Image 1 (cartoon, rainbow, N blue to C red):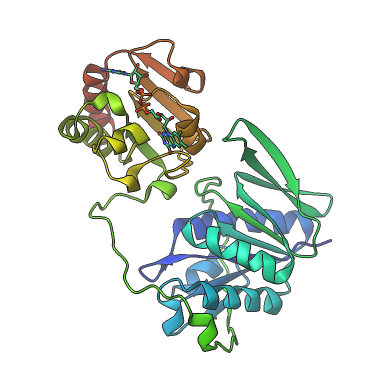
Image 2 (cartoon, rainbow, N blue to C red):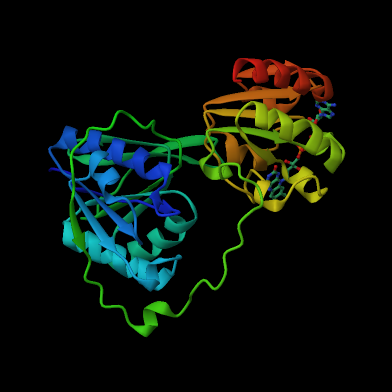
Length: 324
Ligand SMILES: Cc1cc2nc3c(=O)[nH]c(=O)nc-3n(C[C@H](O)[C@H](O)[C@H](O)COP(=O)(O)OP(=O)(O)OC[C@H]3O[C@@H](n4cnc5c(N)ncnc54)[C@H](O)[C@@H]3O)c2cc1C
């Protein structure tokens, strides 16, 4: 059966987010393998031409006051309208704040199965199979959704952004018919972090520090400059956050953010299961720890046994030269 894939494309500052292009690229491959089609849904004003060039043949759009910031009732209703209008049997969204809340609601409304936090998708026997980590990343399972419409959320950075196939999309305005009940919970204010760094959940490179940094001053003096030199986003273990070295928004792990970068540098982090749950799928993990028996080394691609206060500045110096 052809898979007609609808990609929920999130935007920021009026532009499609990086995840939109990651998902459209993968959707284009999957649709080509099954003889299906790719369409996109975008809520709020954005550059629909870029989505067409990235592989969407139709872009469904809802705009207006309800689509400036995320409003659960209105957005889920719009997503449902897009599924109906597109005839999609597969819907993809990024496993980030909005789809994490909206897709379970959409799943309930459509009576559709949902596989969350996938790190890979493949076409098999006419349907899409999602691969997702379970048990805090200790195992991977392959999930096939058997309902007529299958929903998947996919972790950012799971797919590379390939060359744009080009092309243009037909733009279709969604007819939603919002009521007051759809606006019963609205966002009144959005507080942006002071940092200009890429959000941790979407970052391609992360440098994280642990309890061993000993103070906020040394966290700022060691972790942040290395992150800057690596063109990375700073992160932290919960112990570092609890000690006040970094904000909660920087925490990686089970009760922090789940990240999926191509490079994760862990400075003085022991590798507790709750930390691993948030970063274990990183493509390359570099661990710096003075204890050769630290659990993080079991998961590290490269391990450096040493004092982070010496090793981190040395890496920073080399990266600053290499990436200047
Ligand atoms: C319900 C629950 C949820 C949790 N959620 C999270 C979460 O989301 N994220 C998270 O991170 N944790 C979480 N935790 C806490 C987790 O169990 C660990 O306590 C925490 O991850 C430890 O942080 P750490 O590695 O920085 O500190 P530690 O475990 O104290 O490790 C410090 C490491 O630094 C090394 N070290 C010390 N000095 C140096 C040096 N000079 N140079 C190099 N290495 C050095 C040590 O050898 C050690 O391995 C959670 C715990 C619970 C119970």
